[in-house]
Image (cartoon, rainbow, N blue to C red; front, top):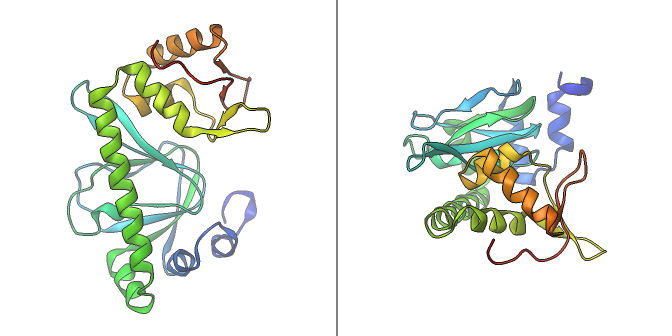
Amino acid sequence: MARGGVDPAALVETAPLSDAVRALARRGEFCRFPKGAVLIQEGTQGDTLYIVLQGRLRVYGAHFANEREITHGTYGPGEYVGEMSLDGGPRSASVAALEPTLCAMVTRRTLQAHLGENPEFAFELLAKVIRRARMATLSAKSMALNDVYGRLKALLEDLGEGQADGTRRLREKLTHQELAHRVGCSREMVTRQLSDLQQGGYVSAPRGDALVLLKPLPPRW
């Protein structure tokens, strides 16, 4: 049983999955992971993907220039991870559970059988791979061309969603450490940057809630 006494098979039917992914999840093996558990280790061989039914996963890798972890993305119910190694190559990133998480684990053989019966899913899978490869390229460019503030500004603006009052609220509630992992710097640097932005009236940090961008962030700081 999943958290709250929900049966995993029943959760597959209510999770925000596309029809093709839902059908694939039904063929998978249900796996539960505690907070902090590492599902995938960068550089290892693997032929499985994980469909998130409940909880949240972080995809991250090592940035060799400054020996810090870089978060490539976080994924919740309806998303899946691990598809980049289905060609039989080494894992391109690590994946860990940010909270207790329930997944449907699918092997390469199961996926091949699913594609044979649902060939339209190949286009969905290909689109996912392309989008994530594009995101990785943009992230690499940002790391190379922008300073810490530039990377933080780009991340906040990307995550911000417009509100009726003209502000923008981040889609995710992220800690300073999680933001630091996203932009490849120390937690102390993020705390200092956000403190300066708060004093300047650019951002608000409601207790227990996501950051709010009160007005457009300055191009440089």
